[in-house]
Image (cartoon, rainbow, N blue to C red; front, side, top):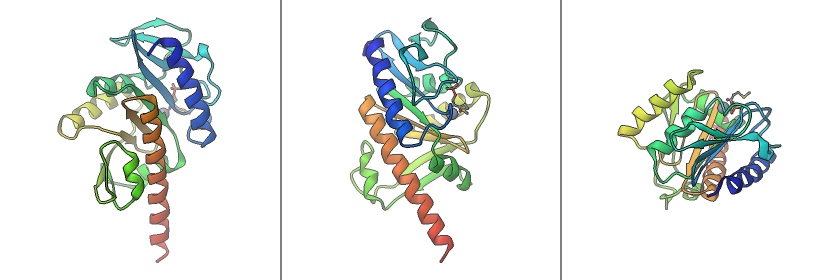
Length: 204
Ligand SMILES: CSCCC(=O)C(=O)COP(=O)(O)O
Ligand SMILES: [Zn+2]
């Protein structure tokens, strides 16, 4: 994809994600793999109101080649996800209430989801009986260290659809912008269902 088309796709994706309440304030960041490297959102902007000037262009090794401002504070994690999965074309990071609270409630390092038809919204899953495992990493203000922890985990348990950062949000990935959006939407739905289920079970 060319840089111009990538920025347009992320602006439209930002509207869509923001309308769902998944990127409040300045939360979240987005990127796409391009013909010349990557396009990533600049740091500190509201992702529902992105403009063409709110992006940085990076070359394949992550160095800035064009754009104003500073790249997202979480760029290192985006770059690591592309490095781990050569077929990944887009990474979308959200700060939804469901992803933030569920990742804090689950004390384990994995969220296990099973029994939902909507698991089939994720690439490679064709039954509600196929267990879905989403890794949860403790949050860290040192994003390069966090990215290395994700890489270390990936060596034994490949990251396929995305990861949760505890008390922070979701990183979703896909082989196209459309697939990444479908993964975000499917995962957010599943997280909301799990939160509701946990709340209901508490009243039993
Ligand atoms: C209040 S948002 C805190 C930073 C963050 O987690 C995020 O997703 C946005 O950071 P960016 O530098 O990409 O704007
Ligand atoms: Zn974030």
